[in-house]
Length: 175
Length: 223
Image (cartoon, rainbow over all chains, first blue to last red; front, side, top):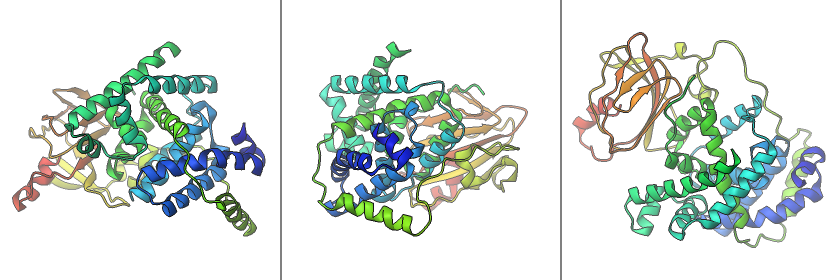
């Protein structure tokens, strides 16, 4: 696994492969979240720098590499684009790592879970999927999504709930 | 600790997608620190982000981007200090009744908090945030048997119980329980007999009350 090579040996070729795969995707997400090109490049540097620094802390039993990198990008977005604070997220990560809170889940479970989530996302009706994308990719607040789609806030919330319930339903088979 | 009241699903998705300000994310993170079940849910909600990142189209990254990051890594390492993150050390033991994620905001012990009386039987401790926000974050300590006047909310309100308990129309809320209420909910909590109820509260600044009088009342209605 590329991330393991970066973690164990600071392998630069492995890191380059990760950069080539995730860098352009992180940039695309930052652009859609409202960053201009220069800022998005900056954020890619910051996110990938964190991937290099924290590779040893990546815990496969918590989820796939893409989920981990997504959380790093989300935290950068909270700090730099929203000017809020990702500190509570970092503190929560830290205590999970320190206390080995894997909740009895293992990496096989984590990767199966992610596959089910992926499949369930593909099967979501457009109107639910769009709301999820606005929130996760375009970094829109619920109220902004409601305004953009000209829907009451309550409808946006109930569509989010429906989407999430559907995703969770797909995971029942794993239990 | 048996936790009965959890994060609302939309709150979970807002946290996972980064849509909460500091006040609310502090409350959510503190609940997550206490609740295995919600942490498992968070993994699912974050997998959504991972999947959407993978599916994302690829923007053009400037030619020198990779060598620039390697230069930064080389420079940082040439200065002699390691930039690699160290694994976090195990949690400190001892007398702690504050969830770890909250310790940087209020210290490690509830007994050390300095309170200010805001109403008979109700004490408050305001928590300073590091980023600008329209929301407020504070601790409340309410005496046993005390009822808080029935109130609606100017906006979303989130309350995490740290010790003691209260009861309202939605049930009993004890340590670790989270009351995740939106603006439409009206409730009248009464603290259970025995010990005071200490809780962490985030409130959105009420938008409908703007007058001076309401601002004076706000310590009460903002509960």
